[in-house]
Length: 210
Image (cartoon, rainbow, N blue to C red; front, side, top):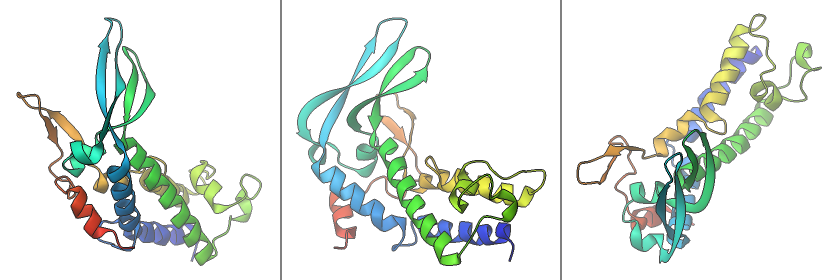
């Protein structure tokens, strides 16, 4: 089996790992993270500061628990961590970091760990033609080493793995609940496809298996 085919198999295994249907995969780590964070973190409000040439948001400490203020998962995951981040967008210099952004980190770390396990399990190694450019399969996949003209199939599968399971992997979308807009009454309109949107903290508590 050539490396491109082996990596397609690995991609399929990663897809299974990240699927919410796999209760022993990332889903388990996700539930632990949500319950632990939501039950202990402070609820942080948002202050909008508009000075004309710049409109930024800043965190405001409330001293209240998120477990008291955030009634559902969609409220929690879109609430503030208390950190400020640069937007790198003209006219909006700073913004509040949300737990959705933290979830990307949790997802990326879990995928990296699982990917390393699968690479070791399958005994995958760098082809001779790329050994001068990288030390291991991880570098080959994530550092854009593969020559697309010489190895189009290998390059494609590497890019797919990065896109789906990297630091901002799109497969985390199954666990998100994005804000789609604002209704006339000022309430947020959330993604209707999220299976976690209306779950409560108690719901997540029941999913956590010690």
